[in-house]
Length: 280
Image (cartoon, rainbow, N blue to C red):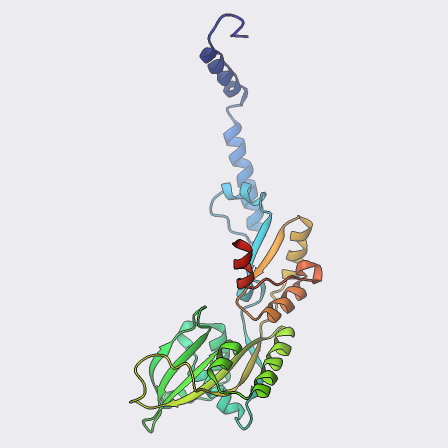
């Protein structure tokens, strides 16, 4: 209209913007804030803490949720349920080695579960050095001095890592790998334990990584948190895709995912190496 009346293009654009602004009621920001507040209140009634009201609007756009497994999907309260000592190793010896490679100050559920049932052997030894668990090494190693002055090295971690640090006959290794796979398929978190002796002259201060003697396997259970299965179902009905992220054995992850209904009972497991290939 302004162009037809002989005004320029700039004047016409300014007039259009003015009309658009005038069309919005002055109370709109107040009303918008009010409804965000209502959303915050309703979420609070469902035990969801919202720090910023604008997040309420963003929640409605969620299409995928990536959730940690331990402590989020599960209760994060590990309990030791199975012990598999190697050959003539006793249960007490297996638990002692696991305890030597554990630390109570980290509050790690795995370490706490081990120390809860292990015999009280740590007080008689002196801790010299600890090599904490990392995602790259997938094991935790500790070097202790015995009461007689000798050194002992204890390690625990992912079975495939510990197996590689030990000397095995091929058929024996296959037997233990099969045992790990069976436990993992049943939803257990499985770790292997090993130990070796060490002399002061042979130890240069680093982490020993070979010539260990295999001690046995420990299997743990971590129950699924109450309400998780229903939450997964609600997400599915809302067209929200749920992804479980974990560092556990693939078979353990698959068993837990199947239990909570991911993938409608037929979950797909993607390992980190496969994910790297997909992203390339």
